[in-house]
Each structure stands twice: as structure tokens, then as C-alpha cells.
Amino acid sequence: KGQISVFIIVAILIIIIFGVYIIMRSSSSNNNIPLEFEGIHNFITECVKESAEESVYYVSTTGGYYKLPELSTPTEIAYYYDGRKSRVPFLLDIEKQIGSVFENIFKNCTEDYKNFKDIKIDHNNLKIKVNILDNLILFNLDYPISLSKDNKIVNFNKFNVEIPVRLKLVNKVSNEIVKVLISYNGDICINCLFDLSQKNDLYIEMYDYQLDSKIFVIRDEKLKLKGEDFVWYFASKII
Image 1 (cartoon, one colour):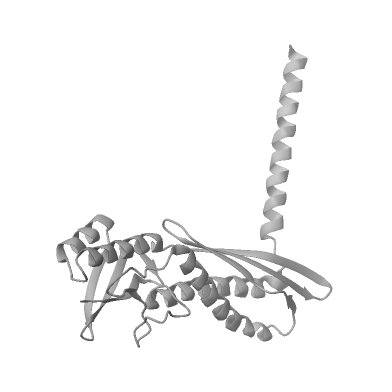
Image 2 (cartoon, rainbow, N blue to C red):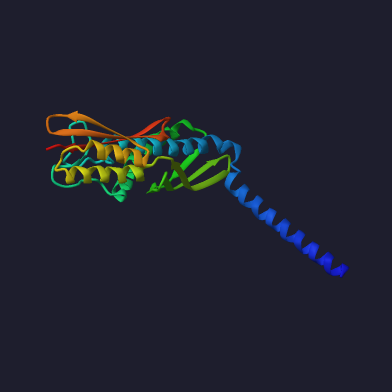
């Protein structure tokens, strides 16, 4: 019995040691960046984060678009209701628009690679996947990049960032607002908007725009973007 107990203890110790080794190895491969490359790696990581925030902010001011639809205001806000039917964009379309904005902003950001003159930087084309989830927007980047200096080479290819905003909910509420407009033939049901606001913990504001239009603003004070309330704009024809 004593020998069996010793063997069991030894086996358990081997399993624990092996597990710790795997964890340490995994941690090392992901987090151990040579000191000479820390600056450029931090710069790229910050570029990704800032580009993601700016791309979400940009489309929030236009109603979810980088390339505006034909029916938009001169102030570049898309119409979600044209007096007859809904024009609210699908989440999949908004994801693509955010991705297009991100690519432009990130490209400008990476022009500052030239400031790292002592490091050779080789990178391939960026591929980005944007996913709008319940309480966040997830950016997954496939961006192969190679850094070399003094015979040392480091390769990266995956970057990701999460932007905590309730865009999925805002899009749902936008659809509900347009349904109200359609059911009331373009007229405003204040009580309906108030109920939507209370039900979803959001603020819904309206502003007159020209004689036949209004600008709707959905404001989320629960989750912030760039340190401020997340705000979403769209326009509507009022008959």
C-alpha cells in the first residue's frame, strides 16, 4: 500500500509539473517580447485600439456608414425612413462599413512606422473581421508583420481589440423607432419613444431638420466611447 501511495504522489507531481510547464511556455510565447521591439509592438497595439475606436465613432455620426447611401442629409447622416419604408442598415452591413473605416484610419496610423528607423518592418496586407456582439464590437485582425534588428527577428500576425458599446441594441431600437414611424404614417408617437427609451435604458432625442425631416439621436450613458456617451444619429422623413 505504501509503494502504491508513493507512485500515486509521484504521478500527481509529474502531472502538475507538466501542467505548469505548458502554462509557462504558452505565457512566454505570447508575452515575451524582446526589449528592442517593445516600442514598435506597443505602437501597433495602440494603433489598432485607436483605429477601432475612431471607426466606431465615425459611423455613429453617419447612421452606420462609411460610404453614405444616396438618401442622406447634406450633413452626412443617413435616412432610416424615407416616408414609405425602412432603410435601417443590417448589422452585417454596419460591420463591413466599420471595417472599411478602420482600414483607412489604420493605414494612416502605420505611416508613422518611419519613426522607428533602427527597426526593419515588413508587413503584408491587413485583413479585418468586425463582429457586433451584445455589449461590444470585436475587431479581429490578420496582419502579418515581421520586425528585425541586429540579427533578431520577431513575427506577429494576430491582433484583436474589443470596443464596449451597445451598438447591437442601438440598431434594434432604431428598427423599433422606424416601425413606430411607419405605423403612424411618419408622425411622431412621443409615448412610444418614451417607452422604448425606458425599456432599453437609452435616451432618444429628436431635432427638427428642414421642413420635412427630423434627426434622431440615440444616446447610451451606460457604456462610453472615447470617454463620452455613445451616441448614434440617423435621419427620418416626417410626413
